[in-house]
Image (cartoon, rainbow, N blue to C red; front, top):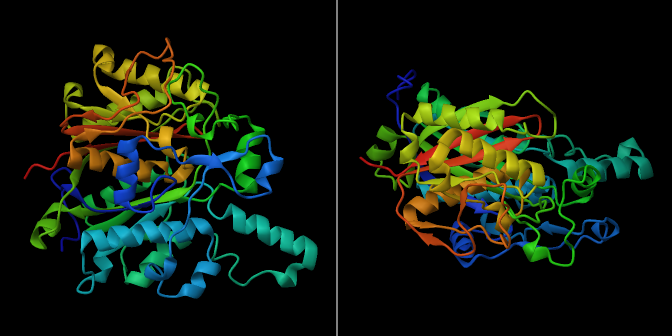
Length: 420
């Protein structure tokens, strides 16, 4: 148990996966849906959403929670994003096979969120307006603040190491995973559970993103509404869910005989410093974060075998990301496969990168690249090699995963095939 490590020589591997999202309540279901090109977008069942101009979203059906929560009463007291975070983290914990009993302070949690408990806050304010302040639940604050997702999971599994939350809008999960890896590299932990969770398929979510015209309005065709890189894309589809992975120092993982899915070899963090909503039109920050991530991983650009794009299906965002990929990779941008998981899941905001990291790991594990669905007419201004409509069988060694958020916040991960 080294308290301080050499960050450059420390290797971080991935030893556990967990997710719940619109196309799967488990990792296995998620992968099957990705391979089938299944969309998780539908008309939202909340009758209050029917009053909005946008009525579609990536909605999650929660499973039986008895296998996930030791205290079932907490499922009614915690915001939905925390419930989904706990589901994903519990899956990752069980998948990893770890036993933190001998050194619980060496195991940490870093689960981020973009909007935290907006539904709980919305309902609480409604209660205050109707019944007065004294009607507020005593669980209101702890049941919706961002850090509770990490804290509650740690409480149930006795993980006493670093524990906090990150918020960087749609880049949250990648920032969380990247920061968790740095904590291991610096010796503050041996194992970190990291990712993101989001629950915004509700009135505050639809109102907030709808009023800025960020959402697709294809109510008549929910399954084809999310169209990353398509000429006729008209906005992203709001979605919910969680994705958490177990990161572990290589020596620690080998000592306990863990199954190693892959290696986190590089991270990158930058800011556009341009606008609070719109991306830099030439993808300035996006280009810089990819370059930084590749340098951190110490690999050449021609070694990248796949790019899991941020690919939200917005007119500006997809164009800027395409431009940034071309700027970084030059002629290689026309050859390296690019795909968008959001074409199927919709956009999970702060949870997106966590779910997409799992898609990346499974691509390495299964030797298949899932397709980008709903690209009916390629945009002639987007000059990248989008994997369209059917999976591609391919064995790649290094995958770049992008996440870009409001405020120009950018985070990239480089996940690689594990080799000794």
